[in-house]
Structure formats: structure tokens, C-alpha cells
Amino acid sequence: MKPRQDSQKPAPRRKRGFERTSGLLAQRIRKASESRGFSETRLLTHWAEIVGAEFSEISRPLSVSYAKGGFGATLTVLTTGAQGPMLQMQEPRLREKINAVYGYNAIARIRFTQTAPTGFADGQAEFRPARKPPAPKQPDAACREQAAELAANVADDGLRRALEALGADVLQKSKKT
Image 1 (cartoon, rainbow, N blue to C red):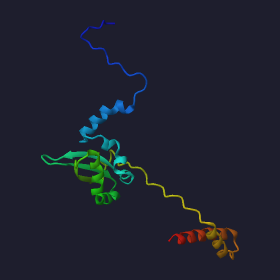
Image 2: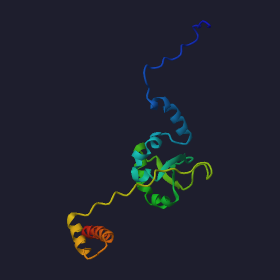
Image 3: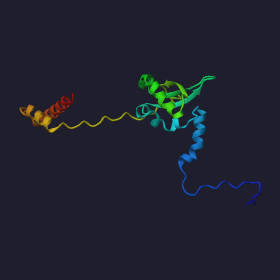
Image 4: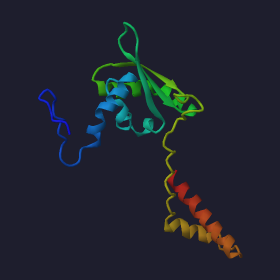
């Protein structure tokens, strides 16, 4: 082993124990996001918290571009084809939420793209699947009793049970409206 010369600096000592992943990746994330125009990486990393669940499930930020001599940037947002018109109508509200992160009117325009950023064959837009509808509520006892009375004359047991269940659901829904 070669003796160390005084001109060589010792390697920086690593912290003992575990380090946060965010600390290890912060420089790489900043470098990658700045190359895409994001001076504020929080817009990329906390998209769901910034714009809310309704927008984050159907969109994601792609890039920020700055016009020459103009104030305010253009944010490009990726969405699926069916959600594009809906997002377009909500642009002022979306822009307001995004600019709250910057603290000033940094994003002047939002451009929506409905294709993958790398092309059709390379990358496809991946969003979370649609929420599952909530499980239907069971009809209350009064609706079940009324449905049983209406279906009492049916001789077949299977058909009668099916009609009772259907009738109880219909009666329960008609009570709500």
C-alpha cells in the first residue's frame, strides 16, 4: 500500500448507521429535474399532495419551459385522452394550486398532452387504476319485509329469494330519492 501524501485529502467519513434515501438521492433528483425545467423539485415529488387526488390520479407533470423574455413558464402535463378536456376546463384551479408551491405566479400556462412523453412504443402513460365503487349498502329491515310481502305469492324458492332481494334494493334506493 502506498503511503498517503499530505496533499491528498482523506475520503469524507460516512455517517454511522443508516442514511435516509432522500438524502442519498437528493442531488441526483435535483439534477434530473433541473434538466426538465423543474427548478422546484417538490412539484415532481409531491404531485399528489399539491394538486389533490382528483388531478393526480389522471395526470402527471412532464416539463417546465420558459419563454424568452417573458414572465411565467409553461407547464406540460401528461394525461390520458379521455381526461384531457376535463383537465382543460380545470386549468385555472390547477394552476392556482401549483403556483401556491412556488409562492408567486411562476406557471402562467399549462399545456396538456395526451400521449406518452417518449412515443407510443417506448413509454405509455401509467396512472393509478380507477377507484372501485363503494360496496352497496344493505337494505334496512323495513324494505326487506315489504319486499318479502310482495314476493310471497311466488312458488319457486330461488325465484322468490331473488325477487325479494331485488325488491328490497329498489325500495331502499327509492327511499333515498
